[in-house]
Length: 565
Ligand code: ATP
Ligand code: MG
Image (tube, rainbow, N blue to C red; front, top):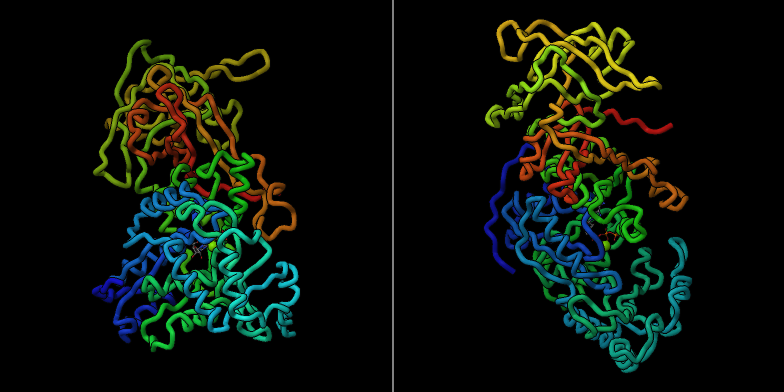
């Protein structure tokens, strides 16, 4: 336990947890210390829901001069792995937070064991040999008391011997548990002799085969907070019913010492639920293991590494968390809010480049063959200090197929025979026609440019309604572009009765293999954030090679997404 100088920062708006913290600091509770923890179980990768908890746990510590430790809640070796430990650290760092210390709940296995032995000796815990079904059946209901286990009055010596055996391999998994002896008629069901230890015969990622009896969440979490000197143990609302049990075990642990001002306290906020995705690690793991997505960092996943690969900035994720805020009521947040946060952030951050995703050739028939010109393209109109780069203009260009129409309606202000349009950063051109193959597909489009209309020249500003992006066919590179849609077809897959696998959106990934991008963008590999002008925000995918460039679409420029009917 480290002493920290606490400095109360004035802030215009504080959430209800911050209000509690400010109050506690003013009252000099815990000697004016503030210590939080972020306690992930290393059984999967972090997702955007965890980001909400991270922003709270680390955020308040930062804001009020406290400390936030990272604690791996590794009390169940069945699904835990060091791969997850490493990934969790990386994601927290990426989000821009720093932990004080790193702790592992497994560091406290001995202390927890000793505490359990003490409870047994005090007649406050017993070994139950019933099946989990039998134990559940005796729990009672909220209106009816439970039934005592036939093993409830087992002599202390016998309990101690059996507990020892639970841990040394003599007892098989599932055939015995240690239960706290509290009250089978307690109005809070969590007090009806909760199971506090069970046997798991699996190698632990840190303690190997040393332990076979493992503490349950309720017997590990509050105690770990206590051992570390946590002051504010912030978690999500589903733990509200666990809070009194949390306090109960801490009262037992402190052995009559008066700790009133020096004890961890649990506070709860609403967890993040997002539309069109799932947040359960069990389901996310299934998607990965069953190859329904391409790994934890698949850009369609709600994981932090998925969002990173998709091209989100950490600032965008944090902005989103800020936007949704913290309350005491569960809600379902709209995925499009996350996208809006990304758009807002990337608008200021992204380097503007040109890419053509569905190319068709445009020939500027009055532009000399072999001639090229360097046109100036602004890197980011939102940040003048980012400067500009040049893009090469020539006689043969790629433009988007959708930017041409032979017989266009009046409000189509793009490439139309007989009409003028501006090629961005270059000239005004007048479309003169097109060439089609036998089945009527457009093969080439023709236009003539006006040499006086070059961007930046005086007199270049005559009014044309449309501006199109383009690439010189000999000064660009082919690339692959991956477009993403919602991972699930329905708004709230977690609330649906059907298996979540059936609810996946079969069109969540669309791969375009015939795209082009300007040379300059290719040389900007260290710049993760690109805007393909007129299209959206994109980023390099990690699968890219020198020869095969791949870009992921982060989000479109505007919210054009509509639910499928
Ligand atoms: P699962 O039950 O799917 O395994 P979990 O919630 O138990 O996930 P943990 O690794 O135990 O995952 O979570 C670490 C911390 O992150 C906890 O404090 C938990 O409350 C918080 N957290 C997890 N999911 C969310 C969410 N969707 N919104 C906010 N906080 C979350
Ligand atoms: Mg958990």
